[in-house]
Amino acid sequence: MALKDDISALAKIPLLSPLNEEQLRILAFASERIDLADGQELFREGANADSAYIVQSGTISVEARSMRQAERFGCDSVLGELSLIATTTRPGTAKAVHGPASVLRLNRSTLRRVLEEYPPMAAAMHEIIRQRLQVMTARIGALGSRFEDRE
Image (cartoon, rainbow, N blue to C red; front, side, top):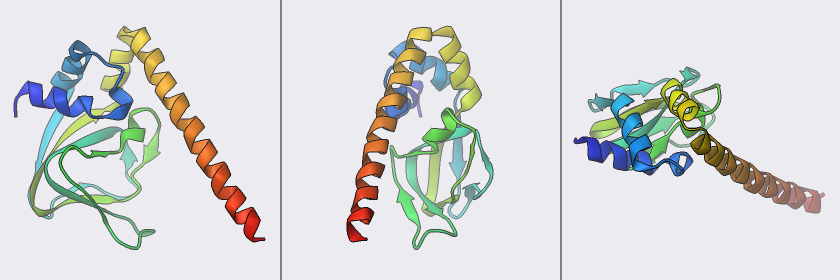
């Protein structure tokens, strides 16, 4: 795939929406394309997570011991977005299913270097994270009140 395809894929990550095309180009140059054969593992549940993956072709299945059934991710899906900003572990094992797959890997250290060079971009990303936390907190509060109503 061409560089413009990688830039387009990165632009689909909501967390990266404050970035302009030049900043996305820098990240695209530093990103790594990984081609997986059918059944090949991308990452294992519990492993340290230091990167996000954008599915460019094929299907990736994520299974975890805590899940009833696997989640499937197709083209343009993002796996591990949180790992770009926080130290975390993989919540499940991911592998290619129903044929080969291709993903674009963006690691946290690369994103941090770009944010250090572009402070306004870091501020915009901070605002996105703040808004997401606010929405999540409201949803958790609403869910909590539903349980309280049942008691």
